[in-house]
Length: 221
View (cartoon, one colour):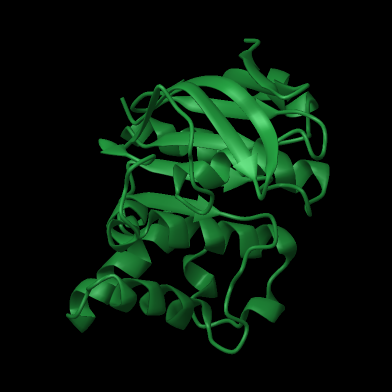
C-alpha cells in the first residue's frame, strides 16, 4: 500500500478541513480527487508530502512511513520517492529545460554527468519533449511546460505521482493529453493521484474517484 489513511483529520491553520478521511492508494492505481474550490483537495494532497502536518489519525501511512509522527529531517527522503506536479508548472525560468532537470538530479544526489544526461533524455523522451531540451521555459506552450514538469516528476523513478490540478491552466485538448500521459505512467507501476475540477475527464479517462464535500472524503467511483 502506497498511501493508507484511516480516520485522518486534516487541518489548515486552526480550521478543520476534512474529518475522518479514509483513503487508500496502491501500486499502479490512478485516482482522481474531485470537489469544489476550498473543499480540501489541495490540503489532502499536501498531507501526503508533509507540507501540512497530520495531528489526528487512526492510521496515516505514506510509502511505509507514519506521517503523523515523521520527523522533519526525514521528509526530504520521503519526497524523493514521489513526483509532485503543480498547476503552475514551477519551472525555473532562468535556465533551460535541461538545466531545470539536471538541477533536480544534482539536488537529489546524482553526480555523474553521463548518468544525468541519460536520465534526462529518458524522461524527456517519455513525455515527448526530447527536442525541447535546450529551450527556455518561456519558449514553450503551457501544455509543453506541464509535460516538462511531468518529466521532472519522473526523474527519480517515483512510486507515486501527486498532481494538484495539473490541467487547471490548459485548454481542453491539451488537458486531456496531459491526463492521458499521467494514466499511461501507471502502466509502469507508478501510482498517480490527481485533484481536478474537470469532471468531463472522469468519463474519458477512467480511474478511482474520491470526492471532497462538506468536510468529508468519500469514494464515489
